[in-house]
Length: 188
Image (cartoon, rainbow, N blue to C red; front, side, top):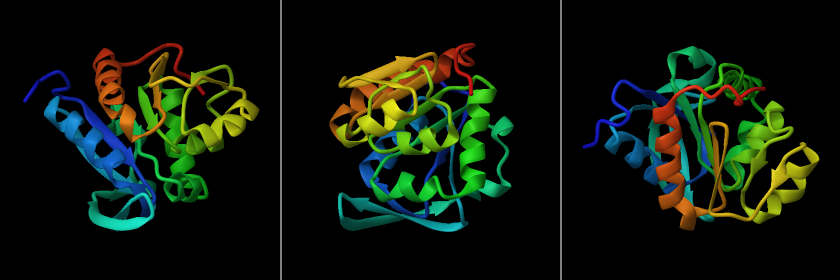
């Protein structure tokens, strides 16, 4: 195990259903292998149901309801994708405010695939360069972001990737940005 992220605490925020499993498990494993303490947050306690595309996969225990969490207790935020996951998550005001708090505090945020929908709802993408699943590009541009079709994009502590094929690059940049800590340009 690496100690790159020793003493770092990372929140992974998901809806209680609809997470793309590999976009949760692979980044989580990478964070833990780098030495981070990771907590899974969701709107409700209990379990978060993951999917392999449209097929039900594993359920994961939720460590804490996002409404009971304080962003100041975490060093970074990771947002997995899955079509239903961020679409559901952005309907929960406490989740949106939790996301926004990381930008206000200049902390690293990593979002993959459809996860930038939650960032749109948080109003934190104006002037930022991001990537995502291709179907989100119009939504992201309408939110003021510059969308590019690249494996991984880093913009002042914000790490984004397109899909599960990008996970190796995404995980590497996510760990790098979290290790660097706060970024002045990471702001709401």
